[in-house]
Image (cartoon, rainbow, N blue to C red):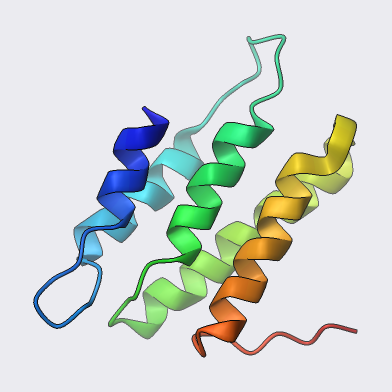
Length: 110
């Protein structure tokens, strides 16, 4: 499943943009994720999806805003859950840095 989502996130149109439907699907997967009945942490899985979502090249500013919102939401969830290793937090920080370096989002790092 993770490889499929990574492939969907890497889709590009002729002009180098990620199709809005691919971005929406990745957002939906993150929104609908429920790991409450599983005793194992899904931080690596969620982190991979967040990194894929951060690598998308959107044409819509609303998509950019939603991506940053997803990243920030998962950072807050990681702070509340306090998982071992903080895998999700590290992936979120990598995603913010990736978007910042690509010029898609300005991040205040203070």
